[in-house]
Amino acid sequence: MPIWGPVFHQIEWDVDRGNVRLENLVKYLESIQSINSTQEERVNPPSGAQLYRQHCAACHGNDLKGNGPAPYPFKDLPPDLTTLAKRHGGQFPDDYVSDVLRNGVVMAAHGPPEMPTWGTDFRVVDRLDETQVTLRITSLKDYIKSLQAK
Ligand code: HEC
Image (cartoon, rainbow, N blue to C red; front, top):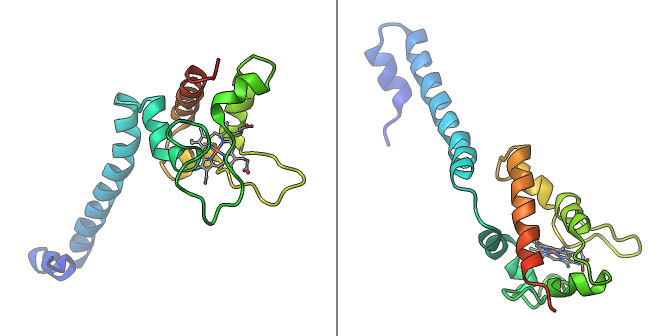
């Protein structure tokens, strides 16, 4: 990889214009970064199943029953996500699951929760906007809902 600063400064008679070239390149590279993740997601949003496999299966298991391959250093057993409806009086708790995904788990007497706060992760790490975060959360919730134990 050549060092483009001096090269541009040789091509351009004036130092400022060489700097403008560098700045333009940096701006261009920045612009394609964020456009790629958000635009790609807008055109082709991942399904709940895809999101689950990518973000959740390591802890909650491929079958949602809480036996994923990530035991250490995690000490709490991830709960069985197929029994959410059973454990909430036979009704799948849509609002509860959306809230846990967006805001994390609140556990008063425990240490810090091990379940990540996905609302923040999706927004900050994956640079998604609010509509896309909500769509991901809804897809994940509906995926879990579709796999409840009878
Ligand atoms: C690092 C391991 C880990 C990952 C990754 C993870 N979870 Fe969790 N999850 C937990 C643990 C552990 C709990 C239990 C609360 C606690 O200890 O934080 C939990 C709790 C939950 C609950 C509440 C269940 C109940 O019975 O009340 C839901 C819903 C949930 N997770 C869904 C998900 C979804 C969907 C994903 C992927 C987007 C995910 N989790 C990713 C570890 C994880």
